[in-house]
Length: 327
Image 1 (cartoon, rainbow, N blue to C red):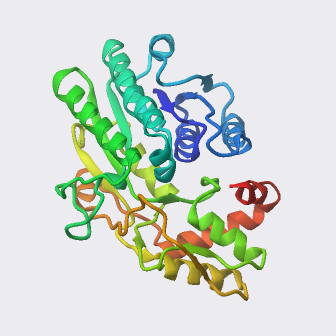
Image 2: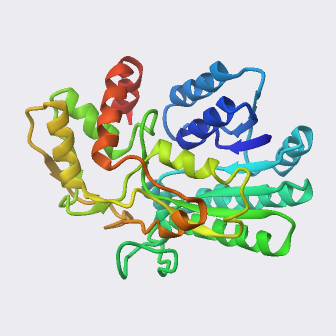
Image 3: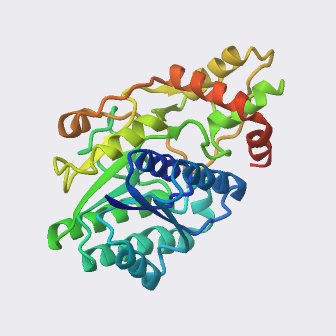
């Protein structure tokens, strides 16, 4: 198939593109190489995809907000399916610059949808976020839980979901919203909690927790996210749906830090700093809808996934650790 992956130089997008290439699909990556974090990581992500298949990969540098570019990409490559992973990331950063997030994430999504409808794309899978839920009335979150976004970033993801739903209902394109829960794993963004905990512990420094550490997260390993996405490539069982993709497990940030200390053998004491605004207090996914619709079953719990990440980190420490240090 001919598949467009927006944001394909990023963390989730590059893992998804790599798997598609391994399965002999033709992949077009559209990415603006936003320097939100070090571009060396994005360039390495693209390099890994090229190593898998140079002939089946096309990279287009540009923005999803460029209507002409998006339309040209879809028409030139006769795209069958779009994985829409591109978004301006960062809950905390969105508080400082909400207009940029609205422009990129919402306007960009709308332009992708308009071009997809114009060029008869069969299906669009949109990467949404657990941040749309905000303050929990109950846990785990199911898809019927009220949405109370706490950050501009979360608002943009929810708005994008609504646009996907509208296009699914009004136009000849099937859309699916996947609400990802805190994705981690090899080549993850260097400014995430797990990468920072691991880096600090391996260097004999204490992990830093913002807040009391009692906040909880449903961490989802990258290969489980990719499996869920790929199950939708040829299947219409979830068309028009919104689904949680999580681990069906959660852990407190304090327990996570303790576990990283234990696994790395670091002789350090955990340090606390004041909590940062806009972060959700708790996340925990009810994944029963994804289990029913696409047979989704996560393969990794957080402890298994962290062990895998530590092993990968140590094998790639020479080039990855400086990126974490700068974040």
